[in-house]
Length: 386
Image (cartoon, rainbow, N blue to C red; front, side, top):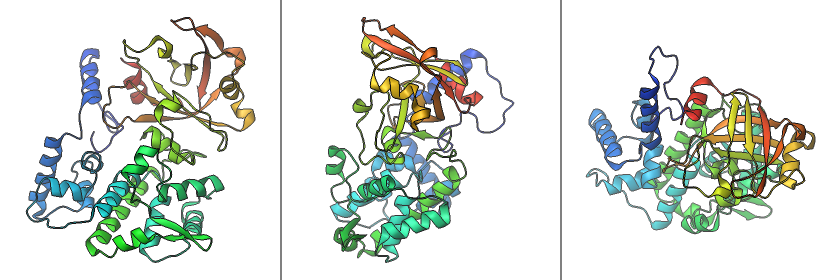
């Protein structure tokens, strides 16, 4: 499960569980802490003993060990992990700026959810100058992806540390990899200086190679048509904002369940299917599946049929607005805060919706959405069974 990430029982299975046993399995998955220090160290030393050396990042996947992203999540970078556990054979040291760059690349880019950010880094290591133009051509020729103007701005903002919210920009203040000169973007002086350290350059190269392999293995052939997402893979709020090519990330509070982004004409919908008993009445929405292909979802409170966001949802197909559904079972995932991508959705219109009153008396709208792809049986069963 740690490696697969999104499958309860990978592949075909003849194992059957009664309802109580299945519920206990689901609860264990919900509350498991895959970034637990003990679990990570045990996996590391088992692999180290097997190899007789410090494992490379690629070794974890090749030898069926723990998902190395758990190390990135817990320790910021593989380098920092090796320092923390005091492996006697690891004597590499970096400047604080280099460590923050490794932290940024490890946590933000190596997921492999898209190739372009990693291609920029590779182009910089290879000595290219006008890297945005170079990567644009590479995306078109090798990935059949056209870099739009929104995509160009988003990519530049990611690689200059302007995409994240203010707190993240401060955390990764040194993670500016490109800068503008004579109308084009090339390597920043800070990154150029950092690459003078051969160990640092080697670790950046290893992260790029790992990230691009992640893209090839997990996402490339699974991207849903005309979207940047892979069906049933899991995404955080930030990753959704990045993949939808928004110029800046939005804090979850500002998204509040869904957000229409006017410039990119995208409208992600985020749903916690099972609500906690102690949440405020104003956000205790009764979202529910009618069947694997039909969803009833409640708008934000203080909304009516005439509200702009509701009208945009009703008329999204006519307006050319792309609505995407992201769902998690509940908020028990205390680590990565990820949602399953369940594909594009389409409102069935105002005639199938109704205005309702929340528990506290404020008005909201119950909308109906048709999913382009009915939810796969195992994911559907996992989500709806509380």
